[in-house]
Length: 222
Length: 222
DNA sequence: GAGGAAACTTTCCGTTGTAAAGATTGCCGG
DNA sequence: CCGGCAATCTTTACAACGGAAAGTTTCCTC
Image (cartoon, rainbow over all chains, first blue to last red; front, side, top):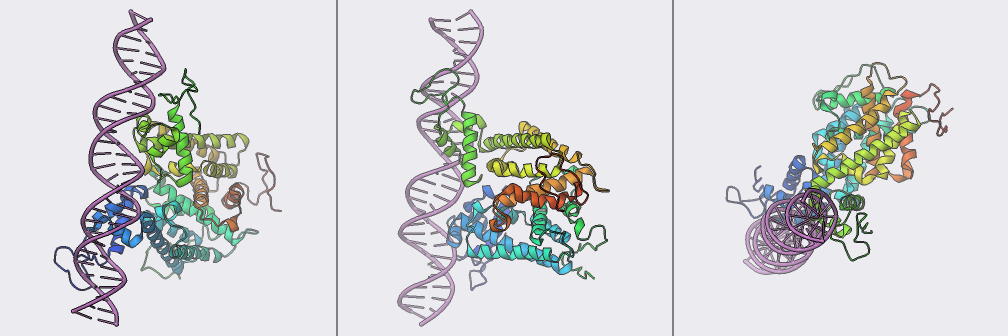
């Protein structure tokens, strides 16, 4: 955990610069670490300040208060989620894989995920947060509208809610340790695919679809 | 918020009895209230003590510490959930209605639900808690095994995980306010039924199957 | 290079969780 | 009836926390 040391002008190898340089980002990273270790309820601004090597009141300057920091943290989470979903949709039209991507995000960014859907922890009306929420929501809905055949009489929005619910529920149960590991295996994405398949029989069930396993490089959905 | 005033011997209308009489239960009820108001993160033992009219250190005597109180609270929640699910299964074999009952429990006992799946808040190895968890888990699985036809090649346990995931996800999203009320309506059970139907096509989808409970036959879209 | 703004520190206060020790009461065997 | 013991609750104390307020250092701009 370096200091990042200035990028502005000086204060390089000297003791500790008065100005941190990138404290805001450092604090958000420290928050991810701390929440990963002990959950969002145990988060302490003073602990974040200690991790960043600044005084205990420094975080308040950047975020106002604890809820403000978590607002920024949740915003970051929704933006990351939107990126994850967009990247999946670049590779495949499968709604099932979009759900798998949702679970991958939750497991890979556990701290963000655990804050994002707990509005009592942050300021839910913050404009940047709302914008990020809408961006993620659009990325989800865009995956639903590409459905080849919506089941008769059911609006696409409803299919979207069902897909969101099952992916979100699986992710939550997995993170909470509610799914016994000896029954479901160690790999969350594989386990998620098995479960999501039960809903997504409708869009491309047994048909052999290339699993876009390579996260970044192996594009070519063909 | 009464005092409950003794049920043991005396200390009836006198000022305040030294012994509360039923402090443990009173504190758990106060916890449900407080969590309903501000979420589990904002829970304060001292606030509970104030609500119960006792000194701030009284809760520690009954529960050890804050996590101990939440352990008892989560245990109560799992027992309530098991009761709810058992009651549903007395009336119908429909797995869909079991999922609706799950959502009804989550919405009707929001405070309990919000604690039950957050193991960092309590002592996850507490024997009474584990027993209650298993009781609720059995009540869930029992609903799956009554499935008339499991889809080919999918174990019943897998169908159970899918059903649990979608019900749990919908409940979580509903409680988090993530489902916009103008799109999904004000009634959580009706909205849940619509969403769950998309998974439970399998136990009576196109094939015309009578709703076993006979509770309400308002389905069967042509 | 002067002045103001931004970034951070220091000091302070009320609240919290928890430990330790004291006070009060219920209960049970003589 | 009553003496003691255990359970229940209170009081006191302490470290950590979130947040407000005021001071200090640095950066930027004119």
